[in-house]
Image (cartoon, rainbow over the protein chains, first blue to last red):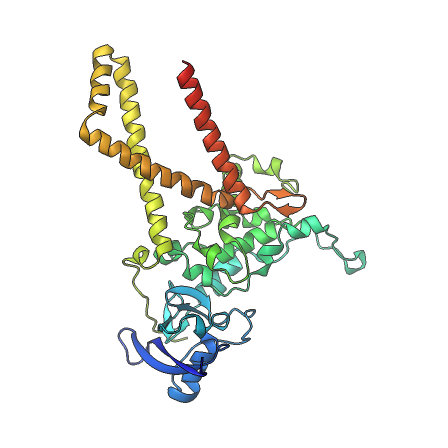
Length: 252
Length: 130
């Protein structure tokens, strides 16, 4: 097929200084077989309308900046290709469930300033070891018990996939709870009791109704739905006071 | 810092926007039929304690057209509920591992179906023998 072809991209536009509410604007964009949706947006900004605003950085699905709704589905726009939508249109919106700052840019402060710090996403060892004591050793088995959760890049696609977060923004949400589990599941960590209040609350694991779409849309193969739902059992055991006897790394 | 103006998009009709959410809502709604079916069974139990006439009346009521329609509908929706139940079982199961590797989701789902069919067969055999 002759290249480049031309595809129509509908972009949600919102200018907080002028618009009462957002509207769509359509652009005709040339593309080849390897043009990503992000490159389509960059073409618009460079050649058609310099005022179009969107976030991006690495272009290779690791920075987590360029998440957008692409035809209603949360996607990393660098990880999604225009060829797959041709000859149809592509409709690009900001990630669902977040307040829109401008065009495709969402306000991420709820996650980065509230939800993420609340789960203490760092190792809380029983006691600080001096450097001279060497590294914390871990077997491959211990490593694999949390590895997939450590792949989270905070792109927030799972929040855009979670209707419970959309309906109640107080819900701690998929990525933060998956990261909470990532540290609880780490053999070097002793912090589960410090994270218990967030985990056990109504806005913690109990805010999840297992829609399961978070795990579908994760571009890094993290399974937040599994992290959250296996912790409902742990939360119940904690409520009845038996968890500290069952956790091998116990109540320390 | 000055208050930044943002636009919050409405959630109205959210579940109709994505087939994944439509299936989720059907899954959740199907539990209503399961609950009604359970209430009908409990009523039957209560009628049984009230003597033979009450029990026979309850059984006769089950053969009415409305009751048959409901029970067929309930069977269908509960069947779908069971399908979704085992489909999400890998998410609710603990971190199951075999030889150090996570158990594939399909194995957990298939295991659930084997247990369901096995239990159903067992109940059927017991009922037939009695």
